[in-house]
Length: 366
Image 1 (cartoon, rainbow, N blue to C red):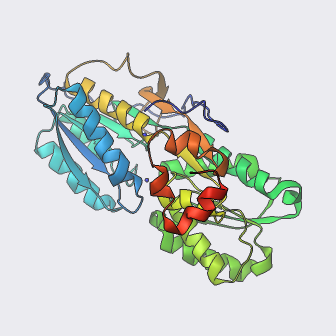
Image 2: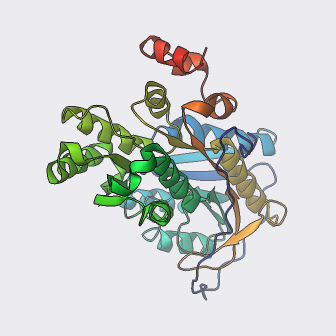
Image 3: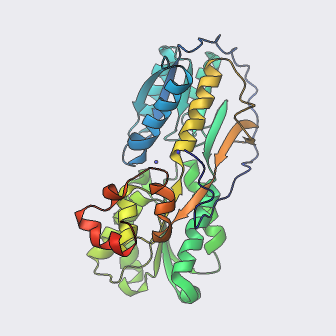
């Protein structure tokens, strides 16, 4: 499954998004927001899963830190993780409404399935911030990354890795979960770059973003195409990349073809250092989390988002949602220092454990 913007990173491929779509704006009359509780607010925080390392390591503590900072230490976080189960998240959302929290931040497991709960919160006077994924329903604020740009960065990096042979090469595309609206945007961005420039021999939507499912899909792709016919793999994130690379190794494919990723997970960065994974996409989680915290506190205190939100986004059910879209950076071996280390996501000792010291030295990470 967010510090300062990293658009100036050495090999940055950063872009900003004017997120737009077409949608029918909800005609339901929402209840008036609750009166401000000042600094004594409770923020409901609903994250989608804990398979992806970022949610517990970065998103949760960073949002908590920002809420505390903006409320003089008085703001309280009421937290729940759905563990990739949409019905569980609906129950958690309804519990937040019953507890009468002042605002809810939700990173939806299923953006459509959560719509009724978002409407219920609105009717109860509880504003909702969509975090990382644009949930359906009357959302009050939204922050995420330029998700099409993520796919484009992955596709462009893969073409660069394939070089002049790209036109005659064949790749496998391992997209994310079909229930995640971001996965569709990653896929769209990647196809905009890859289509017509390389043959796509097999393509999968990976259920629940599980590495085990990516591993199974990759085994199927190898059986279908042949061991010598997989020249590259578009992987939507680092978790999937781990399952893909395991399958490639098990099939005896050597050298490994270039594999993309996303999220700059520690294991992904270490695979990049050793050359097993070609790239990832680094997203400034501290920046995204800070924005979500700012939006949540402002809404809980009855303040407009005009000074925070710089753009508008449309979902399938609401228009002109105040939004902040954070730029992204293609992460390769060449710019690890200028991204995850510079922004204190990881330290060199965290990346360069005994197993990776030689590779780190060769990569200039000392």
